[in-house]
Amino acid sequence: MPAATKVSVKPGKLLIDGQWVDGSKKFNTINPATEEVLAEITEASPADVDRAVEAARRAFEDRNGLWRKLSASERGRLIWKLADLIEKNIEELAELETLDNGKPIFESRYVDMPMVIDVLRYYAGLATKIHGETVNTFETAFTYTLREPVGVVGLIVPWNFPLLLASWKLGPALACGNTLVLKPAEQTPLTALKLGDLVIEAGFPSGVVNILTGGPETGKAIVTHPGIDKIAFTGSTAVGKEIMRGAADTLKRVTLELGGKSPNIVFADADIDNAVKGAINGIFYGKGEVCNAGSRLFLESKLKDDFTEKLVARASKMRPADPLDPKTRLGAIVSQEQMKTVLGFIEAGKSEGAKLVSGGNRTSVNGGKGFFIEPTIFGDVKNDMRIAQEEIFGPVLSVLTFDDIDEVIERANNNPYGLAAAVWTRDVKKAHMVSRRLKAGTVWINTYGLMDAALPFGGYKSSGFGRELGAHAIEHYTELKTVWLNMG
View 1 (tube, rainbow, N blue to C red):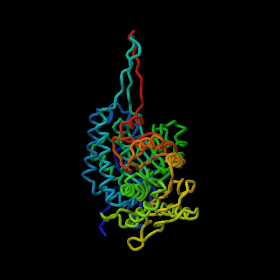
View 2 (tube, rainbow, N blue to C red):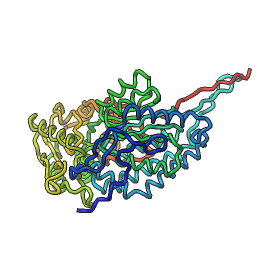
View 3 (spheres, helix red, strand yellow):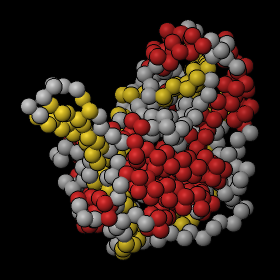
View 4 (cartoon, helix red, strand yellow):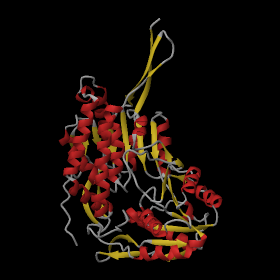
């Protein structure tokens, strides 16, 4: 078993106003592959939140301060420098992510961290492209618009892609000139704490980036704080609803990237071998702890048996193993609580009459320690079953069948979520027609899960609202002001 790097973060510290400060209440962050304590972490109190928001507010509003004096180009260079430092420390960051989350080191090192760098460099370049426009109205008027930063932004990120999803919010927030308070998930705080060191090293002015670790109470204090102007949240739909309610009294702007139950539709005329690979990647990448996971696989009836046989054969080769081993492709579930949730859904699938065709059990790795579950596939799933309607957030695939296009579109859309979808077919006309009728923020054709910093991402229905990534994200981190000059 590969040796772990020493956890070199600031345990028990919070980053407030450019300084690492102590907190009183502590909790442990656990390695889900070994169940061992990685580090002691501070739970930020409401008083700590007050201090962080006050620091962010000073940095934002001080017209003589360093942050306000920076040009858009200089902000962009700071963000780019942060990306360079992440690249310099990529090995350590990847290992911290794997230790804390349980995902394979292959994913952390070669997927997550490179995209963090790419996202930050994208927004570093976009900083100088944020602009208003002149509008022709009356001959006696000069009218134009300005895009100005919202102010202090609260960023609350989940445990499945800790640093990556932080970058999705941090990049546009900083590019637009905001200051921020970042709260990582209590299960996976380590890369956010390391990010704090790199923010300081990059030279960001004090108070621009504040990092508070903690659980739901810390998050609640951020959401309800009157000094925060906007909340950007990624996580469950249930918590997203709580955040909307909590932000209502102060009329905060809110963007929510929430849960998913994405349909992955395979027609009989598809390239079957590629579709099988896509289905495996769509549900078992990231242990299925992915909001856009292709957890509902719709197979055209005539290919059901052959496709399922190939699917099970590939899934059986994916054995949960030590996440630090470069060969591992299926790591540990993030926590004991989440493991119990996933196993509960597996039991629900059995009790509702779905056919368990592969996996379904907790498995032993590293001498019986760790939260590992076999890749699991259910067949004969009905659309009204819990495993077809509710987000499991684990390595569990529900296989359904269909006979015609209208039927599969209706059933694919008959779900509370609308984050993503995929269509597999050689018929280009069919692919585009189905894509237009699916209620999802992203539709992949003959692939699954590809992402790019330049392309917007977000959901329909209970999957939230607002878009992250791409140029459209700046709309959520800026105020649009109209200026009207009378020249009569």
